[in-house]
Amino acid sequence: MEPAPLSAIREFRPEDYETVRALWVRAGLALRPGDDLPDLLRFVERNPGLFLVAERDGEIVGTVMGADDGRRGWVYHLAVEPRLQGRGIGRRLMAEVEARLAARGVPKVNLHVAEGNERVVGFYRRLGYEPGGARMLGKYLR
Image (cartoon, rainbow, N blue to C red; front, side):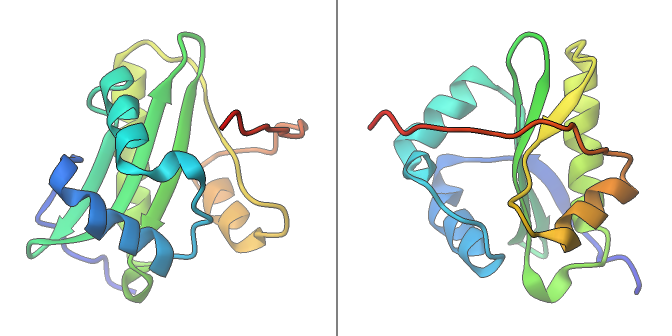
C-alpha cells in the first residue's frame, strides 16, 4: 500500500484534545482515567516535545506519546486513523518519537501492548521491538 502523505508531525496542543480523544476511540485504544485533558497537560509539562500528532490536510490522523523517566523511554497511545492504517503513519510517528528520546540520551524504549493483540505486537516487532519477558501490573490511585 502506498504511504499516506502527511502535512506535518507536530506537538500536541490543548485544543487538539477532543479530536485526539475521538481518534483514540476510533482506533480502539482502551482509555483510562488518566486520559483526560488535565492529566495529559501534566504529561506534556513533564515530557515536553514528546506528545506528537500527525496531520494530513489539516486533519489529525495519528498520535504518539513519549515519556522519559530518567532511565528509560516509554511510548503510549500510538494510534492511527483506521482508514489509513498500514500506510506508514505509525512507523513515521514511532521514528520521530524515538529520535526525540534518543536526542535526550535515552538508551532504551519500552511500551505495553494489551494481551492478545498480536496484530500490534507484529507491528512493533517489525520496528525492532522484542518481548521483554515481564508482566505489567498496575493500580489506580484515584
